[in-house]
Length: 186
Image (cartoon, rainbow, N blue to C red; front, side, top):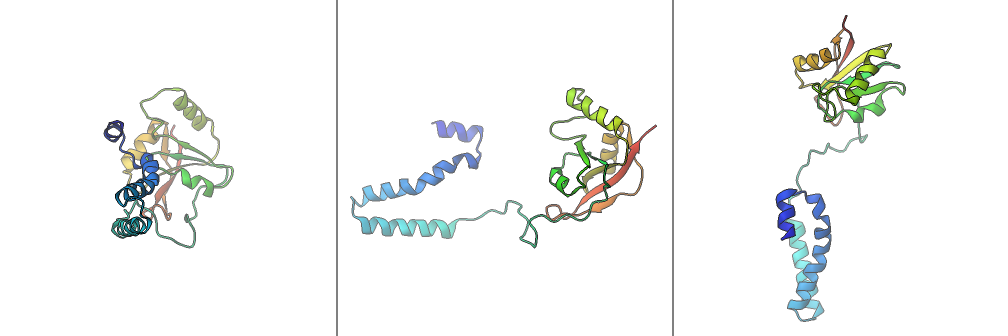
């Protein structure tokens, strides 16, 4: 009963790993009971069941990237040392941060924690950091993000695009990310 409740509520397979890990023991116990302790037929039956399970299992493609020379490949990014990099859409780009120069600061203007409508402590802290930053500022968004959407996020922080955008491709996102220089609007 609790399993059915869990299935309706969550249905996350990763939480059922213990059930999967114990399933072989449960199958062996059932076969031992069926074969009344005779080991050879029980082991033979178990081998057949295990072989069929392995042969018939469909392994889903969960969006993994193909194997390559490097686990993660990122084109050179145009963000100079001392810059502030701002994400302006919901796309997950934190994995790019290690590829930036060491003294580049990265902030998310819009993500699952920060929303333009919020005026909480986190948003105020981001506004203060953006306003106080002296030096180059760059935005990054997924290639598919409409320019109007990106510009609306930047405008909420009094920022505008100030030059040509550069497309940076990665092995995770072959279509790339748009890196655009931005400046504070008057």
